[in-house]
Image: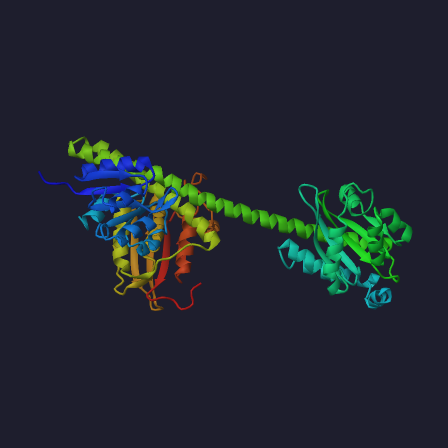
Length: 122
Length: 431
């Protein structure tokens, strides 16, 4: 059996997480969901298996996704993981590059757009 | 000391009746110079000294009915700090039957042509206060209310420390006229400040609302696409798939409306951001047409001409302009399905994109208004078409900010041609 690539989705909106889980599972990926950055720290500490790609919301409740991306890219264990940031805020895109994230997707998006971004990396 | 003060006041020019209108005009000019009311009041108080008083102060009534001395001007600028100190040492008692508290309560001016020592004794609660009052060498006082729509919001106190000047009823009339102009200036400043606050609140609300609206739109769009994908895999009836595609198109339209709301608010604040670079105009036009054409199967969008040089600008924003023009062309051509786009390289360093439709057209009377905010076209049945009336306004601003122009040629019943230009290179003098 071929091992599925795993995508970690971090978003503070349950509806988005559920929809993305369905879309990504249908797309043939293993999916892991998180609403907070704590999961990232567990990954960095080696307590959690690493995903093959992370879909990360820019503005999480009380947390800035760009800071989380920066931490992931500054950590030797996680810096190789591709990060695609997502946001419903227009104009956020130009603030993404400093975070070290690999790509950006504006919400709402087409499934084809989502998959073409993912397939650039895995 | 008394002599010195009197000498200064005696030298000070007092208003003669002939100068009154000139003086009032000067005060009005000062009052209209700024919408910062504290600054305005300070400038006005300074202008009232020495012509109207040796000492002038403006006090405002807070929402808690507390008296706040906003500004004070003295004929001797060195004594301003001293005058403020006195005000702190002898704060006005709101229950006092005369003076500033009474004017603030009743809205009726008070005139004391001559201040006698008996008056000072009567208004002092303790000896230290009396000693202080005597040191002020008060000779005459006027206190006039600042009223807005019959509501007293403050008062101006005019104090003469000169034995040469005793205020009269004529002086009081001038003081009341000045007070009415000051009150109007305060009111205008208040309205301006409140409107600015309201605008900031509105824009914050729109920013939050647009984000909150897009969250359900995002999941709605994903669920719609999943259903579409699953049904098409099952080989379901094409009609259902077409309906789902239409739903997806409407979700995209909703997203555009939300973005437009945010954009119009940003334009108002001058915060619309551009991510500029050189790009292939022809490719952008083809890509945009592909997207728009997919959601308008009845209409046929044709592209003619080409621009071989790259243009300079924010590709996404220019695409947004073209989407707006094309969706308008579709919306206002309910029976004519042909839409032409033509691309030309102009000689003045600009590329031009024309979007021509053969729809209802625009009345010549309406042509001058269509780039205004909230303008909506009126159809042949005199009903307005759906929309927020901000798309062309945003497009016009985007093109203008790129150093180009967005123009229209149209006549009722004969379709419309919208054309915009964008530069080949970054303009030196950007608007």
